[in-house]
Image (cartoon, rainbow over all chains, first blue to last red):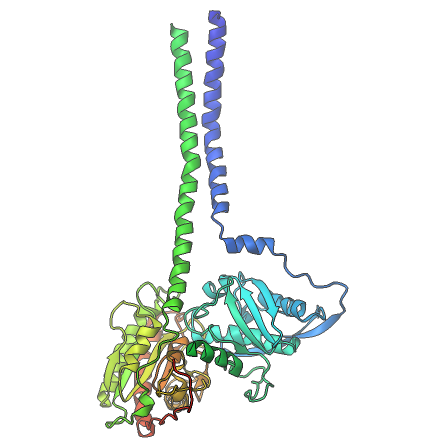
Length: 230
Length: 279
């Protein structure tokens, strides 16, 4: 190799090293970004994979009664009528109204559920018990307290009662699991009565009444009784 | 020779840069590991109380079988949260778990002034489990249970009392109350106690409800005594002094409400279900 070639080779290598050194910060930034992506929880990934239940555009729009907060920070619900294309299928219908509930009202002060919470799954058992599986944000992002947690449960139950008559009661799961409380206060090990017209059910509260629809249903209690006896 | 040295230096420099890049690629991966571990730990921590809850265990022999000779004599006072559980947090650095200790100390004084013995579920920055707190009440005879909370929401300067909805009571053949439904036989008394305390709160804090509200508060379900939750609004007050001003009124209201409840403290005698299954 001639001396001139060696100079060119050394120069080329030096240039490559300098280019690599200059590229290094950008590469490091990209690696960090990729690492942050991998740190996303399985729940986030699942949320991204799960398409929001599309409203059946072919379905005619119907008036839907949604129960959000009054907006006065008084722990009361207020019925708001909106028009949505709703499916006749009770599961799809329930998903549509719950996703609308999660999306929130125009007035964000009247929101009852955290904006980053998502409905992951919804089923209705033959006996009318609905299983609603929400993302962890339902518990972690809701304002802590008995009043706020109770308002969230009431808004879900009242909205389902008004729009999905097939649902008699609801069991709420967080990320597929039964949890002890929503955010440290309201008991989620029980089911919540949705159909307040069931025999023996208390008188349903007026839309703006203080929420009271929390009694566990007889059947759920019997299940607990059987479990305890076993 | 000079060119060889230059070539060697360039190669060494290149290798060094590549080594640093390789190290930087592994760094974020290792950083993500603790995050996953934290998630796993928190999941375990969340699941732990549920699995440790004595689902099949029973409460101590039903207090409903006993009519305490001295009547209502003890109040079990439960400042909620504590330890790593700070509870609700306000914009002014207000932490529910800390402020509640101030409220609890004043409530204790007011109750002792009424002649009650007070048992605290926590006096420092610890965080007993739901069951541990209930166990403090279930071990007493002639007691009521009050759990104190400060909300994140609600009209500032108001206070609410909560009682659980009806829980069908089902004592077994031995008269034992299932732990999970320990509150069952006491719901009626809890409503009465709740209404009395709420009425006292309404006198002192305008805008508060007139009667107790109903909510399935987890802490109350496993408590075998008349039990209420008192929730004060809220940690979002502009300054901490707004909450501090409520302390004497809340203390007086709870003490007067429980004193008014004292004559009603006649515990129900449970009926033993014939042929009830053995646990």
